[in-house]
Image (cartoon, rainbow, N blue to C red; front, side, top):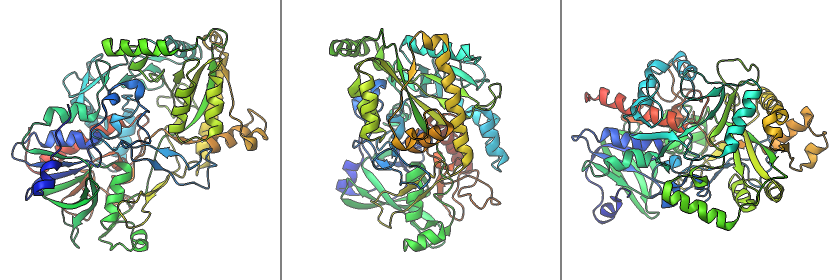
Length: 578
């Protein structure tokens, strides 16, 4: 079902003389660009992906986290930081898709755009045409929404968006608890209202995952002007001392060195970690860091800086202790067959992941949120599933075993509490000049005290849910992870929760901002508003790394929007209009 690998031809004959465009990375952005640019039959496109085809199981929503720490994942770990204690053996785990579709092939599928103020702020920061009125048409261009239409939505795009085909009654009770506390139910979180609780839509097509590769590559894969090469690890740009980029160097299938050349542009769409790494390996980055790595400086830009994320801390809830029924192997087999036949049931969702809350921890009547609540549900007896889930997130045995043992007598909800407007900033640095070495990731979580205070407010707010009738009906209770240093502070004190936050903080897998878009007056900017790398010719970055400020929502839909808009920039700049 996936595009054939043109790498078979390359291994025999080498690359064609020249392409018009080379796109590095077949993730959420790269797949869109490959489709849109190859719409012009006069342009020849080369798409390079470091991974291969997604496994067929990736189409099943329930298995979303099953591909972490496999060959389909870059398997990054953040560096240990002096601002967090990290109750995990190696530091927080940063899964990133190394596969056609990138992280859209292994994420939790939530379709969330952020809000209009996020993009109006991009424009206020000096990026013309990036305000809400300008980006909404590009969200709509990509979208084939199965449930909504009108001003905010379209049914005509390539990316299928629909509600999860699952009927977990607990999701409705989470909504009911929120309504007891005065929060609105948002039928459509991607419309006018942004604070409240919702049943999210996902990037799904009839209950199957609709990754960027499924949505954008498959329709274009038979175009003769599009060559897709898999297992091609780009190591650096071909760039001269004046900053003119002519192509890329790569290692194909882990062994053979090749170069490919582009007449018009090279486009980096390798993501917020790999795109800055490739730039720095090529001599574009902070001069002092490149000199330390003994890499000749071609253009000094703040590449790798401005790293932003949606960090989270998990809370753990027991529910239905007196009534929970343990899941059996027979139940799972029956549910699996239900999914195969109808694309419905528990395999059509990741627990209760569709039940999402967007709140403002300082003012419940505010227009925009600063906190996002997720709910990942596990039935009684699903200890192995809980263990696998927490292992994939990088936690240690104490966390894993405590949560797993709690499922022996109750249903469990793991509740990620995510910070949407993080004030701390991190950075990506090279480990050395070897392109096969993973870069250093410094999230710098909690460097700013305001982030701790936001988490404290968010925890206190969610604890109020335990007093609602909807949660009492489920005998909901918080259970704690034994952390001696925190326990000594007295459970539920601010000192306890501050300690807990520092130990348990990790990532929702939303890195961005490391090739910041901005005007020349912004010394931290790397690309201009048309996504061209400053001080270079023939080079753009089009992916989540260009975001100057992280949107207050999940990042897959905004990244696809950026690629839709970026492809039109290229077409307009080169006089090809459709």
